[in-house]
Image 1: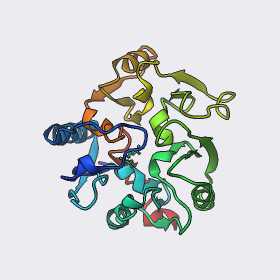
Image 2: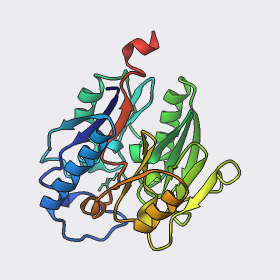
Image 3: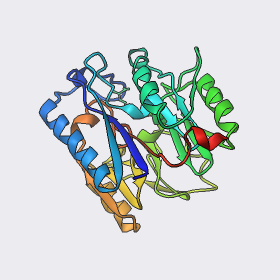
Length: 265
Ligand code: CIR
């Protein structure tokens, strides 16, 4: 099995996670654990080997592993999360990811969250957001350009991360909430599918094994994406949405056969 999905079991303090664009609402921990198990089971069903990091009671947002690293075929870049409360999460990820890829880091002053990085072929779309600053984008560019990646910065104004408001359905077509980010750099080259107005959070999807993974709380978006011919697999994630997480945030998904230390020799 070549596909690895790194996940972390939700912290017992999940309800204390950071909130920026979402109002606090009561979280059902039993339901959150159930949803997390179902999410991992879906990835397993589609052929991923799921690595489950232990829950960390000191890190309420630890379940959102996506933010702590950007995994490319050639290298993994440990981030420096924009929220001070999340910086320590990177240390455990360093240990786990070191098994699969050579590691790079983002230095002091720069901030970068993995949720702001969308890889499409050799292009990295990077959200300039409340969590990722210009220095973070430059630091990522410096590392990624050594491996042939181009950067495409996108201004994110209405949501937490780039991938909250935009993901790729395929290499040419993006699902977006145009109210939350500046899509003008994309318009000439890509086809943009807008989420239905009633489901502003619907744009967060994962492409995996010729499927589109989506949260079941967005039925209109699911219908729209299915009608375009994509094979949608949905799973309930309502409890994670209450602390501003979506389907991408809960895993780091990559192919273990690509990359690794031998790859660079
Ligand atoms: C945070 O504010 O950092 C968490 N409560 C939610 C992070 C969600 N991650 C993501 O969109 N990649």
